[in-house]
Length: 150
Image 1 (cartoon, helix red, strand yellow):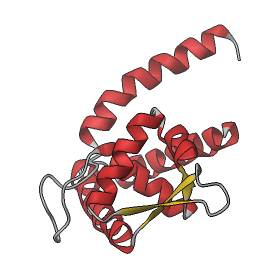
Image 2: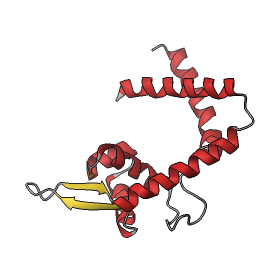
Image 3: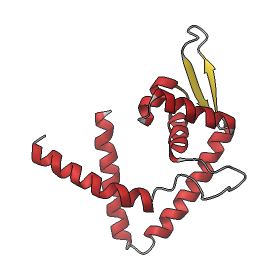
């Protein structure tokens, strides 16, 4: 990658991040919905990772979230307090701790997903279908490329 490409990519990412996060990423409903508590971004992202993988060690989970081990411990602790995730030590190596989503955590993600879909529909509803299709294609391409990086 050339320096100019890296600089342009960084500019675009920094330009897109604030409005994208502010206007389109709503981590949870603004208040309790369907009996579930409102939870912060990192908690939702943690549950999404756990749902996809089934279970993760605390270290891998911290790495995937992009947070310190201490922050991950706090996040998982709060998820446990709300009955959304569970921790268990590995039977062979008690220092290794795994986290899994609970049924309640999986249900919360379903509620979150419905809420997020409705929010996106409201925010992007004024766009013509062609623009929405283009946005979908570009985001899918971005994810495909980022997945190549690991």
